[in-house]
Image (cartoon, rainbow, N blue to C red):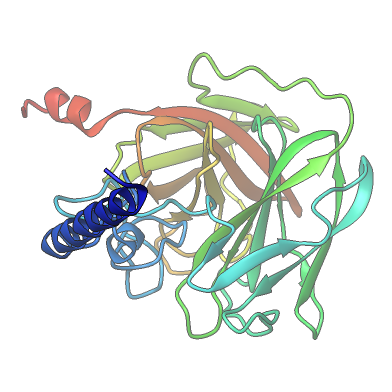
Amino acid sequence: MSTPVRVVGFVAALVAVLVVSLTAGRLVGAVGPIGRAAPAEAAGAHGSDGHGGDTAPDGHGTGADAAGGAGHAAEVPGGLQVSQDGYALRLDPDQLARGAHDLAFVVEGPDGRPVTTYDVEHEKELHLIVASRDLARFHHVHPVRDAAGTWSVPLDLGPGAWRVLADFAPRGHEAMTLGADLLVPGAWTPAPAPSADRLTTTVDGYTVALEGELTPGTDSDVTLTVSRGGRPVTDLEPYLGAYGHLVALRHGDLAYLHVHPEGTPGDGSTTPGPDVAFGAAVPSSGTYALFLDFKHRGVVRTAAFTLTAGTPLETAKEHGHS
């Protein structure tokens, strides 16, 4: 066979293959990335806000779908994304030298400009959590914002890898939590992962005990009891509109959950200690670090705990269900 004939035959075969491929493509439809849901399904019906699952009328999650439901992809827990719904957290810079420095950042809106209007939640426009990746160090602070939308707060951080979590609600939008990594160069030895739950801790002479368990996908009751010198503390002071604030971070990826206290100071039924009750909805099984902020005699202190959340299947078996 001559060379021109061979070329014509090759081209004809190639055209036939392309026609068959296009026809099959039309019949099958578009194929997305392997192992990923379609964008609308992957994002869930509502944006994740770091407060639980479904969004309640007050803008906070109820946790009803924290574990995901049949036919629906589980929502991404708060703090795992640097951007959501067009909003993005930008640290400037994303590295700090060891010691006391100002941490500065902006929250960019869908228009690419810094956000300058926020809803007030728990007496603040924005709550900032800065935690080391090993969860051995923790800061819950409240930065100040200038007119241009830049937030700043002084922090004294040691070397290591840190996670910065901004919990806020842009004006006219539901609450969300965005996270970004921060590096402080220097020698650092990470703390070992916890080998057991830590249900009692002491800070500045105060003993705080935790009672309750975490069950993924449901609202779990957790109670913290504060005592000092063996006596219950019954005169806790309101801090950010409550007798205590509890933050939960999942070991491994630092998924964030801002747990809300039950009751309000001055409502006639909520006592100022020694018990502070919370409702928590964790997104999965695993080990969680819990940090309680409480105020007494004009000083805010933080008590740290470790609690393991079981799987829904294990919980069902305990209650006699298959």
